[in-house]
Image (spheres, rainbow, N blue to C red):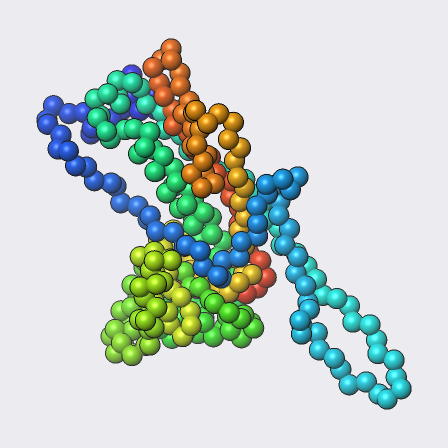
Length: 306
């Protein structure tokens, strides 16, 4: 009786039992924190009306990139070739669908309903962007850390320094897996006696902007813990990173709303209902359009024991 991709009465055994269910229920554990709107995350733009799903961000070697050189009196100066390049961000569709029968929704009470699925769609697609970004930060040419060795304060500060030496300016963001943050916290609290300066005054405001994953600002670098950071070296390590603006770029698009009676936009997430009357099945479908890429070498990958 259970549908392959759907929710039928036989497919929700933990919501339909011979016992009396309590009014409350708990959500399964998942990483629900997102990276927020940090200045180090460069928004490349939207593909809306662009004629392509690929965004191209140009690199220019101006504003002091090339320096003048000593030139003899009366001599002509040679032309300087303008240094340039580009990064492309490809935006693709990301979708999810839940399908339930009328009987399943009837017996589940308010646990399976359109409002709950809509909220899930908005949160899931925000987390999808975080997942996409977390999946690429292991690709910087500069790296810090040793495979199989716990992250410590010296390695973390070394990664910050390596990134600054790359001439990265402005706000910097460091994303660490929970394992990495735990390891460096233990090192800060024990090996070096908790003497590393953390700008606590920023705490309340930063938490509002970046969520509870924000762990502090150390020497001008915001640190976010997020467990969507991927593994490296065959699963032996985790690959976080610290970077400034231009190191990580992302883009998106706005879905088209064709039928307001069955569709709604949640920010840039399209949420809609698809009804199959013959089988008494209702699908709740969501789509968002996202893409990300590494940009210029404005970051350092932090690869340490998982």
